Image (tube, rainbow, N blue to C red; front, side, top):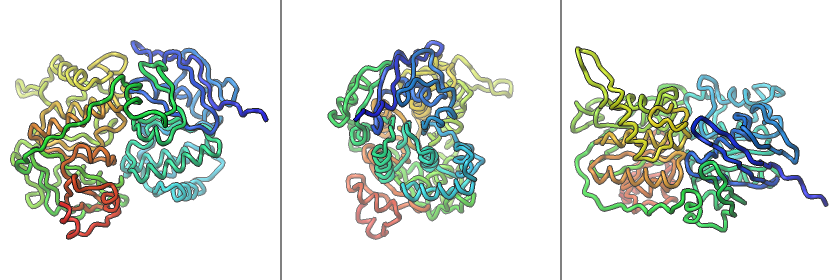
Length: 504
């Protein structure tokens, strides 16, 4: 019986940008029905390679074979016609359109919008990716937008599915459901290219792995035969040191919210119901929960100071805007202006380079670039096209932009830091550094609030945990008494106040 042709073969793929060789003679081959990991640190060339396969970027040289035939993929439409679908790390959704309209735009027009709406509902129910097809995208949290992208790709019934950090903002329960889906797709002959910095996922899910460093293939392996340590060494050249969390004596309340309620601002939002939260100097408090349960609304309330004297207290309220710094969950468009340089993006939250003269605000460009350069070097940010602080935010890989935004807020030496999804899309080395920096801020007396969909991350850095469900916040829980199963129960809103207090 003849062997089925290899699904995808890349031969000597090279892509050069000004001052950056993104892909340098990459060759790899993946069979039908296989789940193949592409592993590498931020800026290693993974996303560029995937965009070449999907027709978003054209290679300078090299060839692509699909199902044994050389193909020239001119654009994503041509890729989809071949049976190639991709879920991007940075979402490609229109905010003003509904979920169903966004999905429909990405499909051929053989089905009506009504039929696509029904298909979304059925696919979401079958795969445990809960989403309302009629909701406008601008009302969705990051995790919910991730579900839309995944469902849109699944509806094309792909022969090759490219997933770029698909679980970066999914809960552990949602990840397990997604893995069931991916294994089922693979058993039906679909080939999956899987990019993730979560090494446990790669070892559990993937059949094989190609490692990239500096745009080149530096290794291949079977992930199940490797450890997290060996994969880390292959990817970044070293194994991150375990975090050391010292016992701390907490100080005064720095962010104190009392019995705060707020009705949803749009029909698809979440009502905040009697929120009580106390974050003290010298501690890290975490908020866990399934995306779309009020995290977005709570972060917005803190960001825009929607509290009055009955709800909110701060020891230095007059100086709050200088002492409270926030890392939003959305990088582009919220955390950074895509068309601004990294130096100019400092002006969103920092004012050290601004002076007042003759009644006007004056910007000192040299000081601004010096600040940005300090952050780039401290957080090992690979700035787009080698331009350093002058690089545009949109030219950076997702992980490198995340490192810069987190670094920008940490470098301000805040009294209160609120950070959402701190390690979204960053490699294991950068994630370890960000978590270590969070602990260093804590030891310097900063009050830190972390909102994250990654339970492992919360367990690693937090002193206390809350769970948010349907706009309600659970009592705090000492992280030493918390278990994934207990937090999982609370994510469904299943906590009893008296029982919860026993765990504090």
